[in-house]
Length: 272
View 1 (cartoon, rainbow, N blue to C red):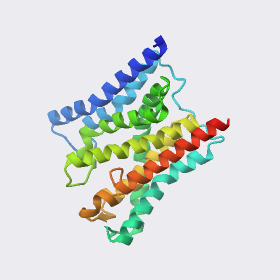
View 2 (cartoon, helix red, strand yellow):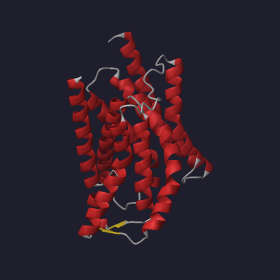
View 3 (tube, rainbow, N blue to C red):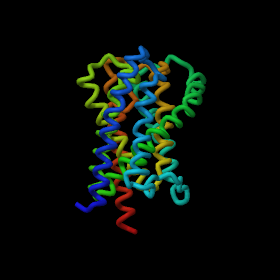
View 4 (cartoon, helix red, strand yellow):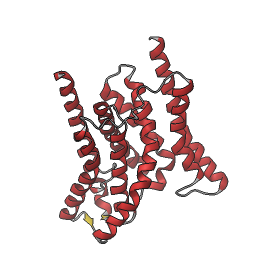
């Protein structure tokens, strides 16, 4: 292995170790100070540490900033940006529509109240996902791509590490009575499917911003639906009809869309 590739692999491993440990450190901090809810110091450690690690590795460990993806690169990328903004709102709308038509889902709250909740969630979601996406798509994905591995396998590897990063605080963001033994493997499939989508947008545009916008739009649109009870998914159908990443319909539609983007990009590369 060449020295450059060896350094990239070493730094990717360092980043992954930091990412997989920082959440547990954050949980320990929360337990020590007696605070374990949204907005805690531990959650700040969990969210910010991967990005700080990325900065250290790029500045002092030889990675540089060439593949950081900071430039938006709007020119010629109208489709990826439109796709990134609309995908998750359309996905959730389709799944909720199927659920309502099948009797799997109830919608007890008004649509005007939901629009207000969506609007209020947009800015916090955007800020949070700048931190998250510039760590995962702004660092880990390009580091692994630079090693020459199969790009689809890189998406899966990034998805596994990214999914495991969520484990320490999963209990705060999941409203379910399901056992984690069955929930976590399905959630991981959903995160891997999303990693394909976000990773393909990165490869198509060479910018992290489409992934930031997709992630922010998805969180702002879907989280209020579930957490603020604008929809109520009947417990016996939650595995199928939940519009969040662990729902079977969501996993299937996200996975199909990711494979379609992958093939679309490969075909475009072969024609160029």
